[in-house]
Image 1 (cartoon, rainbow, N blue to C red):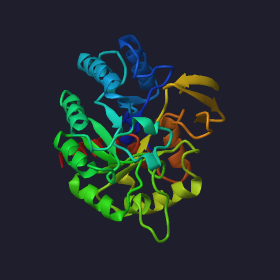
Image 2 (spheres, rainbow, N blue to C red):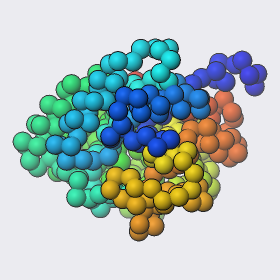
Image 3 (tube, rainbow, N blue to C red):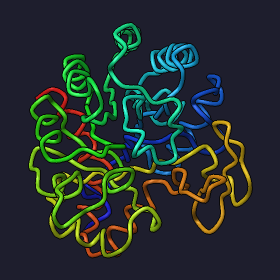
Image 4 (spheres, rainbow, N blue to C red):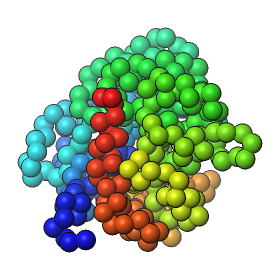
Length: 312
């Protein structure tokens, strides 16, 4: 493909990134957020969704307000780096059974109307393209999907132990995407249908992949590329603030994260996000046989199409 082709000129859009270059959006000031955006732009990014882990609402509210103000201060080609399009909330309405590296103590369901009302009020101040990951099987999960879809969010299914009936209801309620596919969800089983086979076969759902060579095995990646429509595949980084900082021990989100051998692991040895950005994912997909044009689309136009699904 010619270097000046349309796909080759696309800028990356990352729907799921927790930080990089030592910058954590949970506590970064404007200068640090600009440094994150500039570092991403230097690595081919045009835009991204700063992604927030579950926090107590008292802690989350000032974080959201600060990020909303930073986003409002940005304009296209302002020299301050890749553009924040909105926010991605990875929770807190997730299944503790599939918490992954997230702290189960910070997860919620829809059982407390006062908490849900406070959460929804916080969401009402957001503008732009925003995303939330929800487990549909939790109490009130389907109602939350409907509410967040009504507010214009891309609703993604993730950190879920849902069976086929809850997944079907979730799509009917407005879910259109799946978060870090295969990770933090019920494993594929030959008799009990769950998120993985449902996601592979659903034409309504796009899926996102962490293609860092650690979160998914090569055969699983090959299976996904063979079964799923490539236009419905989105690359994400799930990068953490230690990305780009080299091997070592880092204190992130109150945990000790060790970066070594291309992975980030918490004290229990579990994967805790990624340290690879989207270019590495494009390289992985092309090595698996996907055309460069299609791999670049997975890191750019497919992600934009997923965000726009909120308007369907």
